[in-house]
Amino acid sequence: MNKERKLIIAGNWKMNKTVAEALDLVNGLKRELASVKEVDIVVCPPFTALSEVSKAILDSNIRIGAQNMSEHGYGAFTGEIAAGMLKEFSVRFVILGHSERRQYQKEPDALIAKKAHAAHAAALKPIVCIGETLEERRADRTEHVLETQLRGSLAGLSRDQMEETVLAYEPVWAIGTGQTATTAQAQDAHAFIRRILAGMFGDTVARRTRIQYGGSVKPGNARELMAQSDVDGALVGGASLEVRSFADIVKNSI
Image: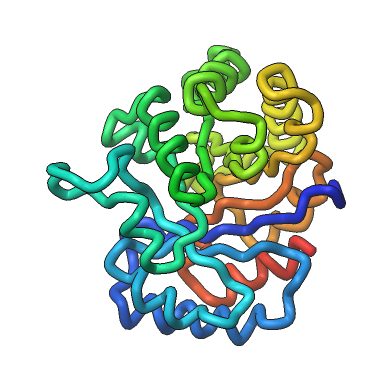
């Protein structure tokens, strides 16, 4: 574990939780994690719960993130959410380029880069997701895919902006499947990502940028994953929907 980079554990609730359920979950997390200072804890509810969850976590050690945002400001973009709207709810982080949006909404790297710039313009910290499919891994194209996504999704960011960006490596084949990359696979991918960042932004930025692992993270594998030198946290899906499992992931990461 690299002491220079503070761990960041974020829960991506995806399209789950009514407002009442979201409040039950976050209030439970507040109780369980009140004493944790070594980890940045982030919850990312659906848009409908942002307002109430943001009120519930005031004066706590939990931060709030959104699951997506538009690359545009205010205007005629039906169904979209602008960065300024997220700021109203004290949102600090925003997930961009999640593999599900890349797959189902066909979001390309260039669009994710535009969203990253819009997030930084609003002083939001993007969590930019990258990762290969099972077919790409089997074809030995993992590094090519990761480098292409990094260069495309981070295009035009300044060094200062990159330091305020979190990356999430999500091997798509390990999301929601119960499969998890081995610790060696995760470390190898994270180390490769950091090498590409060094080429794009310089060694100092690469050393300071936090890279989360996302892909069936559970309490039982969190400690070993977080112990890897280039793994700086986790983007947690299903296991973030229950107080006990998410709290144990955070505690086991320390």
